[in-house]
Image (cartoon, rainbow, N blue to C red; front, side, top):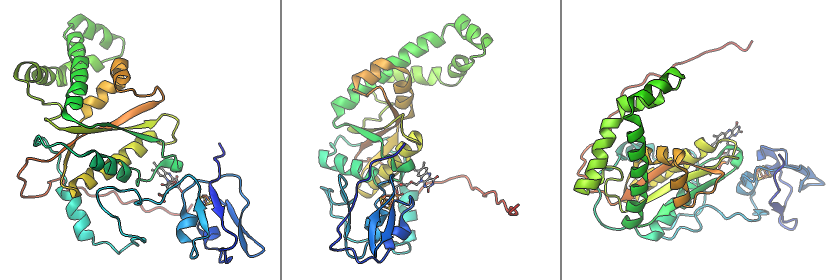
Length: 305
Ligand SMILES: Cc1cc2nc3c(=O)[nH]c(=O)nc-3n(C[C@H](O)[C@H](O)[C@H](O)COP(=O)(O)O)c2cc1C
Ligand code: SF4
């Protein structure tokens, strides 16, 4: 499918250096009479041409430079080239992000949530589709309202999973998922439901005062990857901004299976939610970064033929 071309070249500024032509991954541009011209009929709208132009002759209509719209901090101008950032600090940040399961009651300002969404959009996306969407649950009441919906989905699922003949029949029909769910999750979920309804303790969102739902259009070339890459940026940035986050997989599962819940948050039919991020001010006294199992990468050396 051809995508519209948003690139415009200011002929009065173009010196014909050819940098944009060389960097373009799509053969959209050519040098004609020592001037960059749009000769292709498709563009990724990646803006690489704009990023390399020494005279600022290239712009992309309908696009804004990343970093221009942050409300809670100012991003420096210019490009941070490979090697210009200290990997020590970056790796330390990555290792220090922990899933936060204790939040203070302090609200997260709307401007911070909006900046986190903008940071999410710095992620790469397959064919630069940027077909992600972000739904904000900006306060504790909204998180609780959504949590209530997730909970009633699991109450229904648990009721169904307790019916042994149904589990048996589905397994016989080659659908063992309900039996597996019953064996692995039923009791834990039942405990969570009891905590919520009897003790008013939130084991689902851990008392978070806000949440960000990251969805993507099913039409995108890589919807799951795009949404999760955007989510990864949000998790790291939130840590840098003094916030704690936790991915809530149970909520993603409920949204995938419960049309009523999707309707409740106004999710368009062509979108799937790939991540639900609980977010708030952490109330956790960590002293050390994460532990992980050691991993040894598989190295494959191949001959050309
Ligand atoms: C899931 C995924 C798959 C991608 N696949 C390719 C690919 O096969 N070939 C390629 O040249 N670029 C690929 N890209 C890169 C995107 O085209 C690129 O991220 C997008 O154009 C935005 O440009 P940027 O990464 O420079 O911001 C992929 C990106 C993602 C997230
Ligand atoms: S936006 Fe990307 S694909 Fe389009 S002309 Fe510029 S470099 Fe090429």
